[in-house]
Length: 171
Image (tube, rainbow, N blue to C red; front, side, top):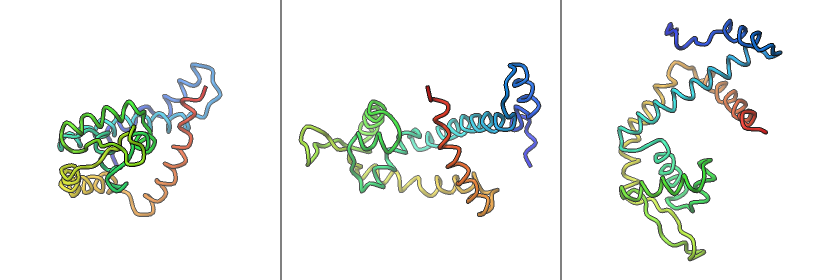
């Protein structure tokens, strides 16, 4: 069990005090789960960026390369944006950086000459092959304290929480 105080912050008592302070009728445990999940997400995002920096990538650049590879090595920018859950402008920036490094190229679409396709280069595919053993090993280690059953439960819980994320952005 981790005894790092940062892992236990905020506490359930702190959540209760804040809810009382604002005179709200909210479930302190639900609020605590959401707050800790947000904090874990921020820490995971920072760790992910440091992890991919080892390979000269960002998390976004890696995700784009992996998505291209999973799609047979070629995809339109709009499909990349949709698949990654980001804007077309974000994809443009990622593709620009990856193209500068020779990991992808743009080529005119065979279906519509006015649009472009993003294509994974041999160098990009090699980059993914080179980082795979370390990357997947670290991912496995990250969740290594969970049993197979706990990982199954976690995936179910994560899917349900993910469906609720829209509550933060709903009007």
